[in-house]
Length: 365
Image (cartoon, rainbow, N blue to C red; front, side):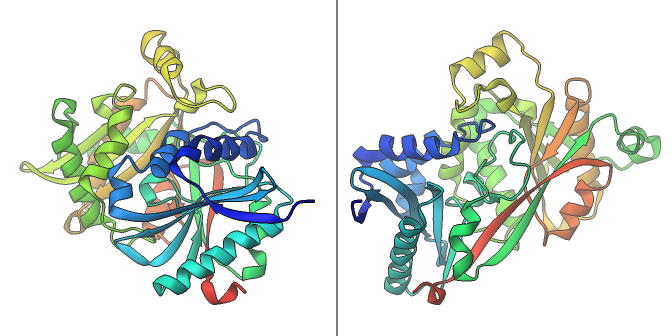
């Protein structure tokens, strides 16, 4: 057996990284490739995120065979944490993962960092969490389908765990319908409008400004950048409709938004990613999608607990109630009691768990 060797991943090796990442995850037939384009962008440095942050991608090889990969990230606006992003490893690659952790400890020492986070992929916008249950279920669009054995690699480092929950609900739930159709709840509804894609950059500016004023207390959130989010959003413009991004306004002032979209993974074959075939099936053939993804909602602090929440939800429901059978939330941190309470207001059918691991660098020896 050859000795293990840890090497930086150069931009010209981006395809090899992505090939290995997908090969590991494709062993679960429920996996859909929602991340290749993002990983390539990170590794080639072509996007604003790479200009604003420091990225250190690595392979661990046994001879010429990769056993483990990750992209270490130090975010300029969250410099006290070393992220271990887009991690992948073969099941028996414990020594290879230990080499990655030794490199993490080295980077922490060089940059005066005390904590290592496993499961945060650059920022909350790019994905977060290792899958912790429902491995036999196809994940919703934009969610990771990581194997259960990933947790075994990090047990020895005594990680602190932050848990998240994604909730799935039927849209014909009687409690939900009574709430949405209650005549009394129609009063005091404020104006909601769909996004204007002919002025996408300004709409993304509003989206980012609302996010930064609403989410700063959320775990692992740091101030969003307009260009980064424009680059993340723009490639999906052909799949999205203006109604997928809803803004709430109080006398013309943006006070909240709700982002939702269909679960495009229903149209994607196992192991494959979003592409022209997805567009063709959805926009041209009009293939039905049963589930919509309730992705994100932000409300300015002064308006939380007000009619804004109800207004956004009712507007969203008016778009989805006749076209979808299921609604599924994005991950919600279990520490976010308010959002979890809203998500569980009706009758959850199934809940998927995700976990982020926070490791003290001093535990890596």
